[in-house]
Length: 292
Image (tube, rainbow, N blue to C red; front, side):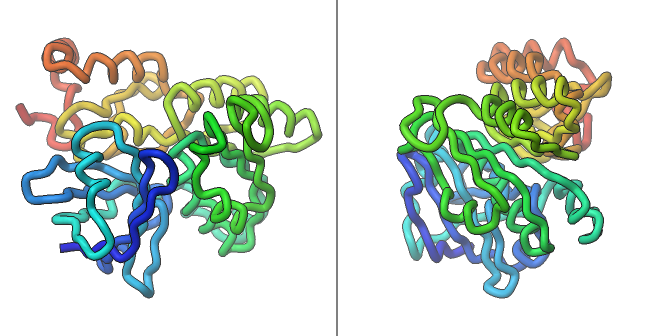
């Protein structure tokens, strides 16, 4: 059992939980994810790691209620326990492979949309601990839906907050802020964008025209976290990839976002899943590649 030592509602239907999981905390890196279950008969849910404390043996999870399973999870309180916390899974951010000197030489921009602020935070914190000051754009539909602003401000070199409705910070989409920063003379060696697929699509489209290499996280399409369900099958360049076993981060300029969003919609129905399995054949599954 994995005890919850902190639980709070960050915004409407968005929750943060700090969980005792010493073996996970000891090994995890920014960009990786966990699979959690509230109870023994609960659905397995993949969640990107928001933070970790190796000394305390804890990991921090942030999730949004999108269905029955996440609603069930939100009902857990301080002192309750998760039945399972499995991980770390997936590949860490490629930035963790660089030396401190290499990281300090790079000009990095992070773009977080909505709940995407949660997986962006540990990457920015990781870089700050290595002496890197990076620019961070956090976008939200409204002020009330903005999360982790103070935490992000503490680790970012420069933080730019924008809301779609102009209720707080700058007004407009995150892409407008990118355009403004570049117009002001900012130059970036790499952009990391995490959030809703539609946001990542348009960020990648813009950064491609600006000549900024871009990394995106395809965690929104993950379901079982092992590659065996086929849910997170995506096309990157001319290759079939699975977000949970090959990612979750990929070259944003090569991801077929339109295909991924269309496929995700089809996967929501039983008929759609059967059709995808039929048309995709042996490439429908990752991991073992042969489960039925």
